[in-house]
Length: 178
Ligand SMILES: [Zn+2]
Image (tube, rainbow, N blue to C red; front, side, top):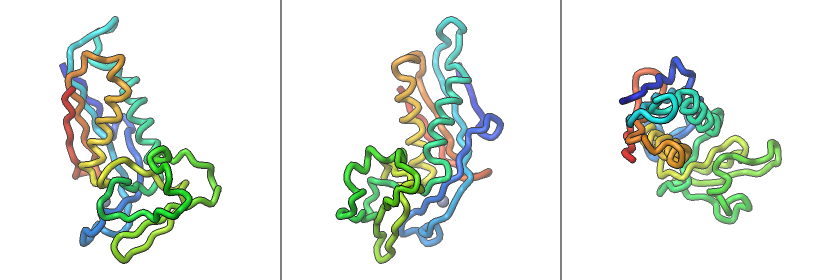
């Protein structure tokens, strides 16, 4: 059995800025209004015979969307982004990827992409443990994060399928089998 959640109708969205380093047109910082479609496949289980509780699934996806919403998405494992290591903020970059920073504390994230230098307020950024913030990488990120929430409680799930759409009409689809 499969359940399907349509991101437009279920309001699973976020608006973020990103860049694809070295790409001819996507190398500059630009934005998308992303929409996340989700499907779960597995046996029906539990008291109600659900594959996954729709409300629970939507709450999880919305929580992940809210981490990214209105942020500049920065892939901390990028091979082309050179973080300024002397920056006081560089240390423990992973632990801060969900932007758990005080607003207006004046801290910045500094990095270089070839000759381009960036300095952005930390509170405006979301560092992600990814090599890129393409739709492909974000789809994988959503699937892995959703799985973290559900693996203890919903062991009837056989696969999580995510489509991260960069607006309407183009999206990357990833299936995580569990
Ligand atoms: Zn883009």
